[in-house]
Length: 101
Image (cartoon, rainbow, N blue to C red; front, side, top):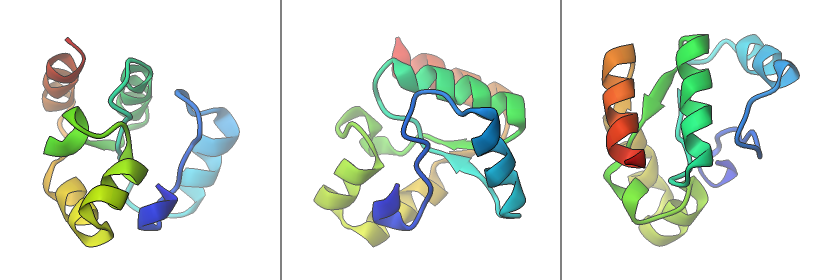
């Protein structure tokens, strides 16, 4: 995520200290999960905290944001994250099922 000036939690789960820090930033939060199974837990936490989740088309090809950014470029990666952002709990759940099944 640092490759796009974002914040990386570096784990499959967000701890309480990270949640507090993220909320203190006062910015819109868009979670981009890794394409592995561990990303599913991160999506569940995003739903719990009321954060948006992005499901860019490249998630099936690249493991994470850094890999996508290296291959596709920073601007394209950011644009695709913003365009694929979902805020509806129902839509997030549907995209999660599609990605991890």
